[in-house]
Amino acid sequence: MVLISKQKVREYGKGLAVIALLLVAWECAALVIDNNYILPSLTEIAEVLLHPAQPVLGGESLIANTLVSLKEVLTGFFCAAALAIPVGLLIGWSTEVQAYLNPAIQILRPIPPIAWMPFAIAWFGIGINSILFIIALGAFFPILINTVDGVRGIRVRWIEVAEMFHATTFEKLRTVVLPGAFPRIWTGMRVSFAIAWMCVVAAEMLPGTTAGLGFLIMYAYNLGQLDVIGAGMVVIGIIGLGADMLFRAGQARFFSWEGKD
Image (cartoon, rainbow, N blue to C red; front, side, top):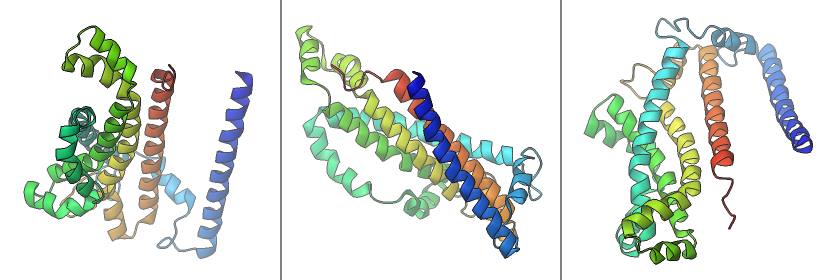
């Protein structure tokens, strides 16, 4: 355990060293350029970050805009998971269902979620519903594909044991297939949350949005406040990193048995 701990410390130390070098380079560049409209200094960005509850640019605070984005991304993410997991189970289990759905999935999957925004606005109007549609669409396919792969990776002998106990198809899906595929589903959820987080920021930059980190960044851009933009980007990065760490911790905690007989 001590050796592992020291190795982890060294790994984190290397990563932090690179971050420190980038921050120093940023601050030096800001001092040389000396133009807040091109590159704000880290102290100016930190000033915004250190007062997250204060109104920003005459509107909501940094915390309030962050909470709006988190609420939207979690709603869209869970809607996507609620649809993608059962559909993925069916596709992975049934070759007939796969034959019907796979061509459409392979055509739709490469299309960037933001490309659907004109249709989203036409269908749902300007506002929260369009944003949720884009988020759910972006989060849907990684979960779906990983669910299908997880089902196909189920060991045949697990199914055979269930059949020995005369399990119905539903019982096999519920007690064998879903638990066995869940490590891959979890991986898909990890990837899809990152995509959903990017989608919500991009969708909030569109006209008609009145809150959220994407809205705050675009509004600050229109006013030439790059320090606010930088602060918003830092928050986006920290939340993305934190979410990824939570998913990785969950993977290690609950699915350490993966790959073992």
